[in-house]
Amino acid sequence: MSKRVVVTVVAGVVVVGLVVGVALFQPWRLWTDRTADEALLVPVATAPATSAASTASAVPTTTTPAGPVALASGPFRSLEHATTGSATLVRLPGGGHAVQFESLDTSDGPDLYVYLSDKPSDSPESAFGSGFTNLGKLRANRGDQVYEVPAGTALDAVRSVVIWCERFSAGFAVAPLEQP
Image (cartoon, rainbow, N blue to C red; front, side):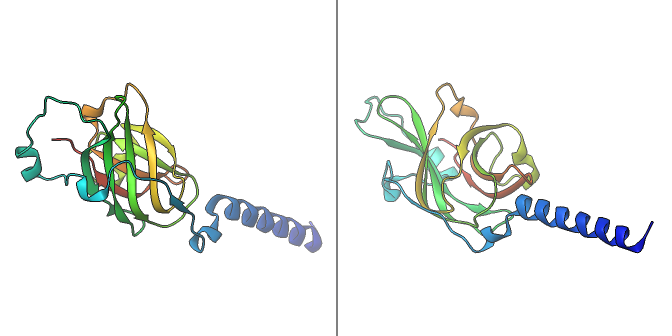
């Protein structure tokens, strides 16, 4: 094989590798942000904190409130990427449910999704790749946003909400959503 053919083949492999690498990793997302400014269903101040104290003092009510009700809430814990903000599980007046993110701030990334997980938020990152309900693509890596929970979702099994990168099977962040 001539030297020219070898150089051409190597150059071709390098170019293909770069194109595939750029498409897969999307490195420009290290410097980009997408911001959402959706109306929150319940004010952050009324969302209950998830803790042993709040679950022990919960008193069931016999009347159904007219508006959305916060059922569980907790701050995000960073996994692969530094993340702040909080998540709240909300019961809607018509009987449906949603999850709202308040003041989310995380890295932008390729192929990010929002999962409801049956794993507690203090589980190791690898646990969140199974036993979940997919709420759809993460709309933005910053700001306030609301995700509808599909009808029929077993909310008694929900323990946390996760921001998950499907492409690399990596968790960005997790927040507790355990109901009292």
